[in-house]
Image (cartoon, rainbow, N blue to C red; front, side):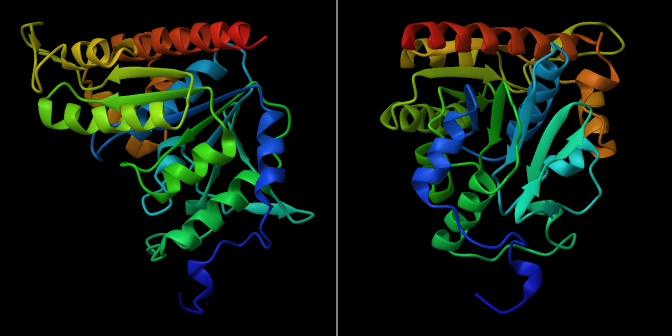
Length: 280
């Protein structure tokens, strides 16, 4: 670790673990978005899920916990730096979603070159020293894989649901299997799989092209004994919207891909409601 101030979070102090856990318990529904590997669209799913739930009238928070590759602000169109009040972070409120990300605290393009303990400390700060306000749900976009940051977030936030994002091909499913099994070992009650990049509709002939195969995620979910929430098709507008800071569920709400996100959001909320009923 160096003395370069640009490499450090700007929120001072570290909230003790018990205080963080108690703070998280004030948020009734907590979701973590897993992926076993990068490049499967995990952050895209997390961002659009947050906005799909917000469009349903829910108060939603979105925590970008991918410290070394924090892309949520870009996808949500946030260019402003983070600010704090009385030593606590104030989330950006963008189109009804409250967003916190380390990307808003360091200069653009500066790499986060930290070892595991410092990353965990930063996550403790983001979780425990943020003024979330009253929320119905908190979605946390985890880094890919099953490393220290994932352990820290799950242990601190005690999520009721893990959403495992994968693409249909076997190489991605292998890593999704690891992520789902980690969620099981961590005791997360609800584990659901989402298949992203599931077919491209040809703009000329209207036929569906299965660039990465089809149905692999649903078969994997069945083998693992976990839920399957649905498929999200490929649409170039998703990439265009992410680059422009306009999630597809806001930019083109009537598109097939936005409707797919909406159906997944409905499935997430039904599952969370059922889990809450089982816990009472």
